[in-house]
Image 1: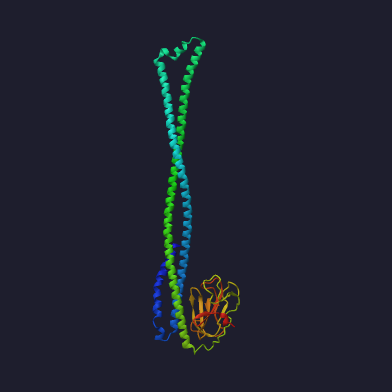
Image 2 (image 1 turned 45 degrees about the vertical axis):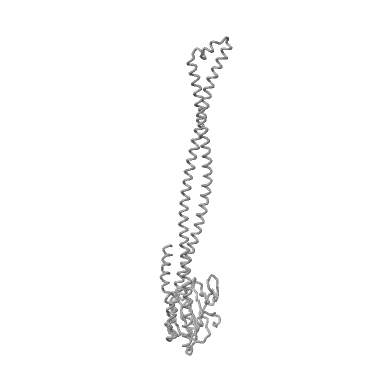
Length: 396
């Protein structure tokens, strides 16, 4: 789709080169220098059709740029939401890591103290064992045997046993405490490593999102620039088309002036209904789904969707156009003299040619749905004095 967009954009830029031709055409002094001809009018109309086609492409391009910009904004909003969630997770994780670091520091202090207590207890046991070895005559055994009575001997033996048991119990207790604290510290270290790894992963995701955000910001800026440039194109084309409308009106007025004394002999000024169906699908001036008022009457086919209904000349006159237009499809113009024209759009087939003289009620074409059309119908317009007018004022 992006290739198609830029292809259209390039074509539109190239077409702008043709805008200069309008100024030359309008400033050539054609009306003062010579009598205007049918060719002058046809050239102006053809140029207008080309400008309308350019404007159609430019507006399609503008719609695509605006849609792309809207899509980019929506995506950027989603990125913002994801970034906010990541920032929140990083903040919470940072607090947890700080708390865990404090716990690890405290556990290290406790472990160091427990290790010192166990070492002290071990040294005390070694001192007692050494003392017993070095003072054999005063050993615990001698102390027990030196008792004056059996009761005293039992009391001294129990004392010696309790000292030995105390040493063993305390050493075991300190060793278990050291082991427990060391195990706790290891678990805290593992949790810390896991959290810092998670923090690194979240920061990596955040950096990736930030990079995408920068790309999308640049992309949005590009689309905004393209929108501004394309809107300027549209404005220039609208001005150009308006100038061509004025030029066409001038040429028509000049033609009417030159031919006012020679209207088609079979023109009555009162129009016949132009087809067999009278089913109106869109009236003159209708704005439903349009950017400007409807310039004619849409008459639906006798059988909805079926092409081929006959189209009649609303009045006598000369056929001045019978060609294809990107919007009107196959359209046909009849000049009835004195600046009055009837126009028939979206035909499937012409039954007359440019230059033919037709009478009121002659079959001139068949109904279709060519050009910008959503179904078989006739768009019937009336033009007078260079502008579209309400057909109902002329229809019988």
